[in-house]
Amino acid sequence: MARCAEPHPSAAPASGGAHGAPLLHSSAVRGRGNRRCLLIGLAAAVLALAAIALAGALAAPAAVATDFEAKSLAPFLAHPFGTDWMGRDMLARTLAGLSSSLFVGLIAAGVSALIALALASAAALGGPRADAAVSWVIDLVMGLPHIVLLILISYALGKGFWGVTVGVAVTHWPSLARVLRAEIMQARSHPSVALARSLGQGPVRIALTHMVPAVLPQLLVGLVLLFPHAILHEAAVTFLGFGLSPDTPAIGVILSEAMGYLSGGQWWLAVFPGAALAVAVALFERVGSMGRRLVDARTAQE
Image (cartoon, rainbow, N blue to C red; front, side, top):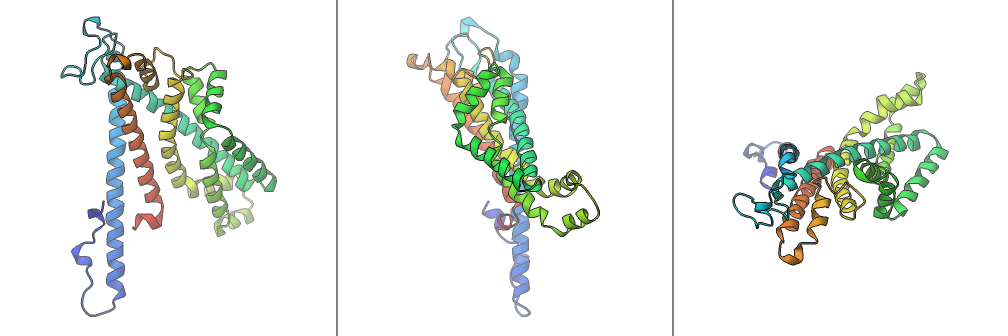
């Protein structure tokens, strides 16, 4: 990344003339180079995540196929991640589990971001009482033990796919709601909003035409940053037995089942799925960090 930030030779200060212009030109060239590097890295991370999701969907049939003649095999060429006690290929199960986690994370993060946007808009545009009510709800949700609340919601909804998805969705919006509330309140003071009010536009139309476009970059970055938290919490709840069903090739299910075989030396049952989950979460975190730097004019020029 440091190499991308180096200015082009043509941006070097020239002798004579004003000294400020070459410096400004060098800063502009360096800023364009940084944004280009951020975009390339962002595209590469998104493509890697899309490849993981596609590979998981293609590996779904192989993830549940059993072969008792090849059970409990250590990693080798035919099975790079080894096999489990039923002869199922751990590479296929890991990819299918990551695909399931990505799907849950996508739905949960999307719903959570919409909840954050709706409550932030109500707080910023609904008056002091609405702002106080939303702030109280945010403080209440953030004050509760996160994983305990998620487990209770998932258990109350019957666990499974929808239980854990709804649980993750309704517990991950408070931090993003606070950020969006501050952004909407800042956009509310823009002269175009005052002009729209003087022309008789209602609060809903003002929110849709002026507020949402102003906070859209922050909303998208917040949505991406919600993904790693949603994936990790889904895996944690499933690992504890309150998430996806045991017959689903999910990372939490795989790690939970592997606990009974680690004492027998079958380390690959937990190491490779855990490492794959960590890599996927790190990629999501990287995408979110790059997106945040792109929408921030100050960090995009550094």
